[in-house]
Image (cartoon, rainbow, N blue to C red; front, side):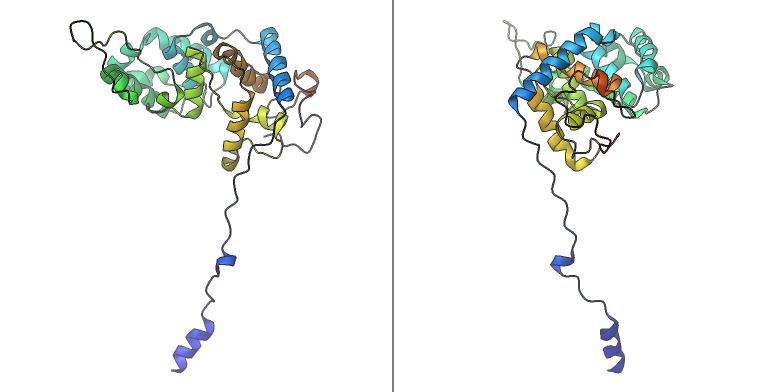
Length: 275
């Protein structure tokens, strides 16, 4: 009896519901002034037309070539990707060539870029779309010729819509938006590290570009800034990425040369993080 009382005396009190730490709610996207959004897009795209780098993947609308560039550019600097992209496409010029290759040969061509899961997923994707066609991204519709035979040749090997692209191996939200925009000129938002940094600094300094719970709000801002047409979206999304790479960088905010400095809510604010 005494031992039981002693145990009860030293037992920790049960944790009450009020003592359980509450999970922080994801912040909502800030209210954006339509006139600011319009001015932001106009100034941004005008700046891009004058200052854009001449990169080879910007000269093509080939979905496969653009997909390879986007996967290579993840976690890798542009200067390193230039030669790798050219050599990789010389060796595997189409999705069919890539699908027919052995994985060891694909990894060999990727050697030096690191993050080899990107190469494995690209190879897996190529085999899926070559083997299954549109079924690889969930399109089960069957196209028949006048004789009633199933048609395969007219089907694209990659879909144009972000939602369909995301069903393929290794394709996340950013890559889906990039391929849809840059290959098919779809009006699609995209958010990578550079874009998130630009959008949070300009429109929402309280959001952190790398904080998971802020991502939904950042994507909503990206959607709100899109121009009306897919063709203009191609320039807009390229410009967002270019501004983050050249002017509004992680280490330095070059506010003096920024085309949207008059709109930016972080202009010359030392308290705004550099991340």
